[in-house]
Length: 62
Image (cartoon, rainbow, N blue to C red; front, side):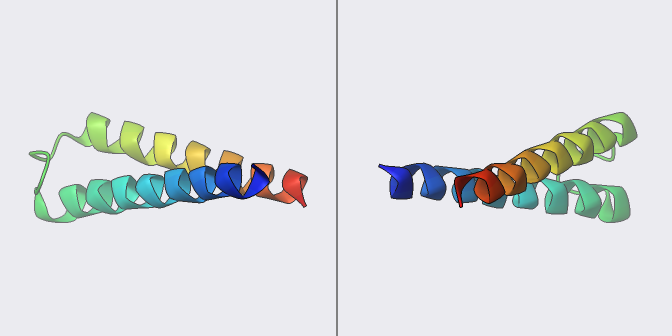
């Protein structure tokens, strides 16, 4: 069961990384979200929080 939980955490970190990448691309190229700066900042903060919590969770699981 622990392996399944670890995979879920790693998967959520991957999705958060993609979300952060898309937010940075949107700030630089005005694509894919239409260059809404507030939305991009919120996406980056949310992605950073999910990645931080995932790393902390993986450290606690060891």
